[in-house]
Length: 286
Image (cartoon, rainbow, N blue to C red; front, top):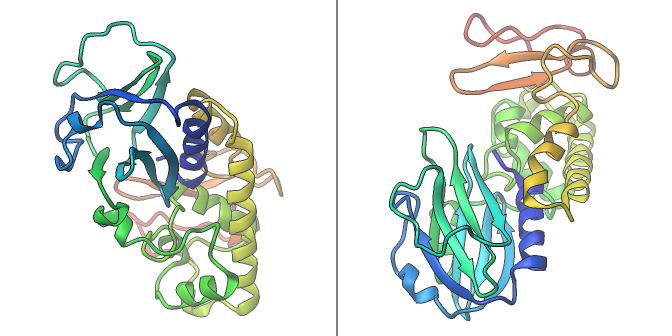
């Protein structure tokens, strides 16, 4: 799933390449992907792209004086920028992985696509980003929150730290991948209880969050959209590296699997050398 760094990089790319151009038309192939129809897609024709930013993991494309195209790419969604399209013909309903296409006045534009059969990509045309339920519920941005507010919000939510970090109502922008990375840098077990974390551990976790997210943003900015997924994978220390050596201590990166996702960690760096039991089979080691 694209997280804060990738969405920030996509916004930066659109600011450089697309902002200032005029919308020729917005085409919708997957009607389930577009969650709103007021304003209607047809009203965008002739309006200028005025901004590109984000709210946590939501991409926000400003169009004209008051319209926003808000996009959540979900697990398998992506933005593909096209310098030109092969055909001027409008998309047909159900055009493979393409959910939405925006054509611009210089014949360029982008497709919002989603692979697989589980369709979760969501797009909203709104006049105020706060009209999008997921945006209105977001906590402070992971790169904007202060240490004091971070500490207060983490301690205010009882649970295992991995789950609290990815709760978008607590902090906006962190997902499964970068939470693994943050906890590895902070040398914390994914299942450490928030109520038992010391001030020193919380300060270290905050600094690890800032380091991991800032580094990922810096590596991603300036890249083309097509390059971002590869850069994300290449920069990971433990996430999606099960069975490979930890880059810090050399121990084998281990995994805990769940019904629809998994996490990765280093036992030597994070759990005092004790492997975590698979949640599907036995109680977790903390």
